[in-house]
Image (cartoon, rainbow, N blue to C red; front, side, top):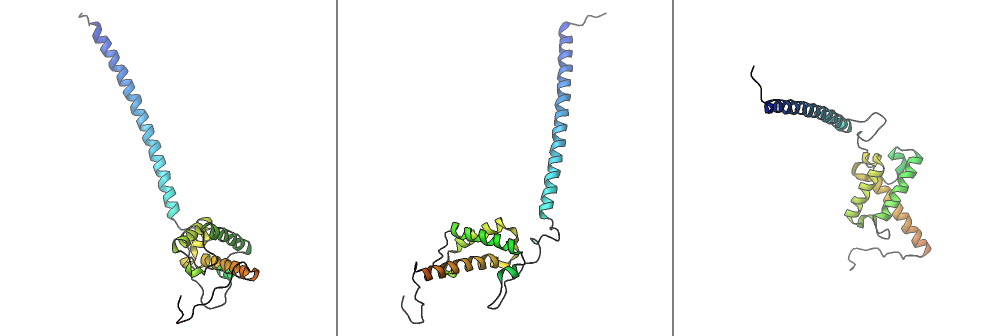
Length: 172
């Protein structure tokens, strides 16, 4: 019989150890890939759920509610919300008017559009139902009403003086 040199046994042992380590690494890779596939599937399902229309009770993806026409209408009734929801939305919009640094002494039409955009985005983030109203008319109406009432109160109390109305032909 031929005697096998010792280094060959040593190499064979190292080879079998390396093959075992390779098999363990491949098993870990397979486990990691399975976990990745599961997470990817969950992510895809979450993304699909976010894109899917909401149930009948949720109005976010429903039809847009247009701004009413005419001189006399109730914001709360046209918004189709409960009195408590409306009061909560009012409180939020009032605080956002202050945080957006809108000048309540000036007319709503003269406000900075960037500040108004910030107000509208923050209001929609706080109350997603506000996304249902075309061109943010409900948020604008509540903010306008708040600023107008605050201005009228300040006039009555003498905190500010009324501004002179501009007439055609007047110079600044």
